[in-house]
Image (cartoon, rainbow, N blue to C red; front, top):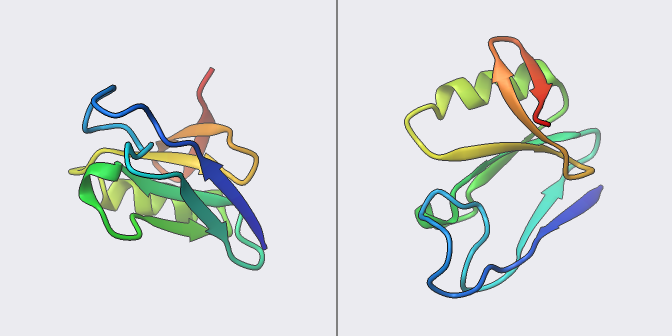
Length: 91
């Protein structure tokens, strides 16, 4: 298992679409074999993320969440966007 920490943002900064919370750091815990996380904007509250072993599964979850602001990250913190059944790293 690995953990990725999303640092707390400054209060009253950014937008409601940010995955960083202005209340506390967010810990993304990747389960055994999981490499990707689909993380909802902190605005929605709750756990706000799912983890996935394959990029196909992460891309599928991203499509399901298309109505909500979210980001796809891998366990190293690299950001992706979904392109149907694959992920493409943002540059």
